[in-house]
Image (cartoon, rainbow, N blue to C red; front, side, top):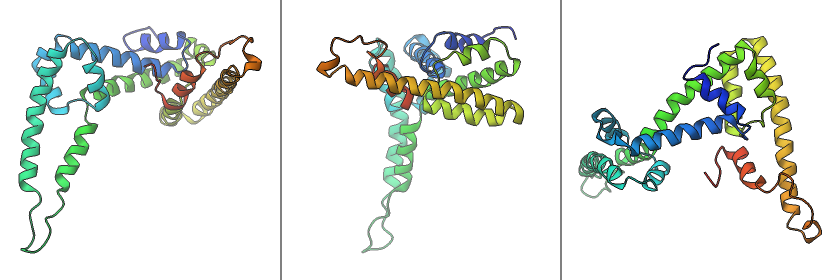
Length: 239
């Protein structure tokens, strides 16, 4: 299969020797979307319609705020805020109505549901999710073709646990029974080796705080803690 727009990020991520190639893909997608949103895209009507409707999740609002375009973010936030304000005002006005003279007002469940949905809605998350699905499709297409991706997979450092689950579930959907069984075998071997390695490196990291080991080399354990957190959660404190 010739490399194209989706195969290149997948193979490059596996060549990078990271703790999870799919975390690397996701992080690169996020960087691209953050830069896109904070770039001239906020003047694009089609983008503004989507950001007005969806807004951003708390994490991506935080990352956008840490960027270098406060004016662009303020313009997007203002029109999104106006849309939300109109909706919330209407829900407040129509909520809490008493059933009878001496009864308590009903719970405003529509307002609660809207606020809950609002905090889960995110233009950037949606864009990342759409492309990431294509990366998963591409990975299994490449796997089915054999060749380099299988070698890179076998030599990889394994996967974070959330993406491990994604791979296992996706394999059941995208591979035939024989192919799925073979993939599970390869995945098990790679992941078990990876988890044992991290466990050992984390153990050595803790030992280095004991005076008895202070003169011993760190080996590969200096950054074992953030890599262990990455392995467990798909996130990392320094991300």
